[in-house]
Image 1 (cartoon, rainbow, N blue to C red):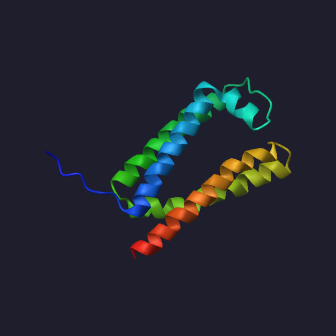
Image 2: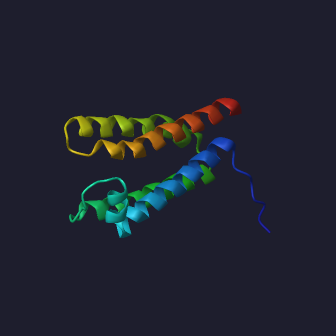
Length: 124
């Protein structure tokens, strides 16, 4: 029987974030207008939202694989990459290209990045 190694706390946070990304992406892939209506946004009829969902599923898979392999370089990179998303969303909101409510997703990214960063510091 294969010996299962327990993930470090930082890797586990990235693993869980990967699951979150996959779930969110599946919503955008299969039932995007449900999510958009919950955010008070107009329904989307273009293909882009489904493409984003497909891309997100694979992004989540990358997070999970990197976490399971304890890739500290990947884990640390996500600490800086995830918070940048809220900045991008903020620019789009200022330009009136998106509804500001969607920044909730960016806030989750910031919170989970801080969580991962704090766990990385504890592991040093």
